[in-house]
Length: 422
Image 1 (spheres, rainbow, N blue to C red):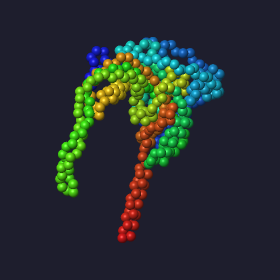
Image 2: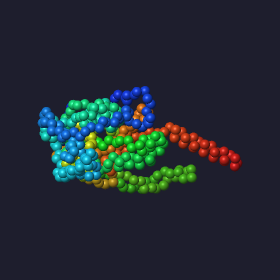
Image 3: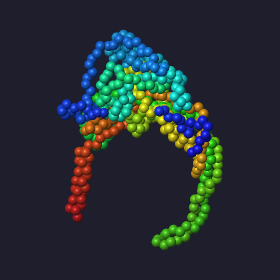
Image 4: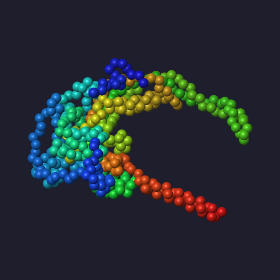
C-alpha cells in the first residue's frame, strides 16, 4: 500500500515518548483463594465531605471520584442498571444528571504533537502492578491491595499520573451478583475443570468492577487505487482422465480468467473504531466479551465511577492508532474489491488521504475475578453490560486420567466381548 507524501497520517503519527504472596508457613485452606487473602478492612466512621483539591500542575485537574452522602456523609456508590447514586449506609439516593448529548472528540494530529488542551487532561492517583502492568485507581487511604487483574499483591503509590481525560463511558448495567451468576453459568459448561473451581465460584468471592480504558477513532478517508478485474470464462479443451485404469482423452469445460486493468476511487468515513488502551488483560479476553454497544456511550460523568475503580491507559493514543489503522485498511480493501467488481480482483496500489482524524478516550465496564491456584493466576472477565464471559481455566489431571482409563477399559471390554463371541 502506498500513501500520499504530504501531511498524510497513514504514514505514521509521531509516537509519544511481585512479589509472591507472603506466607506464614500455614497451608491455605482453599487453593482457589486469591494470594494473599485480603484482610478485612476496618470499619471506619463516615468521613466528612472533603474540599476539592486545587488544579494540578500544567492545568490538569486531579480527579476525585468520591461523592459524600448529603444525609450522613458516607461515600455514595453508583447503582448498576440505574442512573442514581445510592448511599450504602443510610439508603439515600440521588439521580445522576442526564449525560446524553454530543460527545467531544480530540484531534489526533494535535495529540501527536503533545498539544492536547490542558482542560482535556487529568491527574489520577494510581498504582502500577509489577506483575501485569495494570495502572489502577485506588482510594488514597488504602495502602495494601491485591491487583484485580492478576491477584498479585501490590502497594499503593500516593503519586499521580497525567492522562488524557475520558470523553465518554458506558455505565455498568449488571450488578456484582448478576456478573457472578453469568460467571457461574460459564464455569458450569467447562469440561475437566477441578471440582474446587466450582466451589470457589459458588463461595461468593468478591469481584472487582473496573472501568477499562479504550480509544475510539473517527476518520474521513479517500483512496485512489489501481488493480485488475478478473472475468471468468470457459474453454472446451481436451483433458486426459483415467477410466477403469486406462487413460482417455475427453473434451471438458475448463475455467480461465481474463484480467483487465482498472483504476478508481473509494471513500469511507469511519466511526468509533475501537482499540483497547491497556495490556493488563489478554486481547482474547477483551475480544471474547465484545461487542460493546457504543451507540449508548454518554458524555463522561464521574458519578458513574463512584464505588468502582478505573484503570489508567498504558497504550498511548498514537500507538493504539496503529491497530485502528490496520482495521481501517482492511475495510478500505474490501471497498476497493467491491468497486473493482468482476469475478476476481487484484489490488495493485492504493493511496489513501485522510481528512478529519479524531479520537476519544472512553471507559467500558467489566467485572473481574482473579485468583491463584497452585502457583498460577487464573482470571475471569465479565462484560458489565451484556454478561458475556471470557477467562482462563485449569484442567483437572485426575478427571482427564479417569476419562482415559474409562475409555481404555471400555475398549478392552469390547475387544474381550468380540473375542468371546468368536
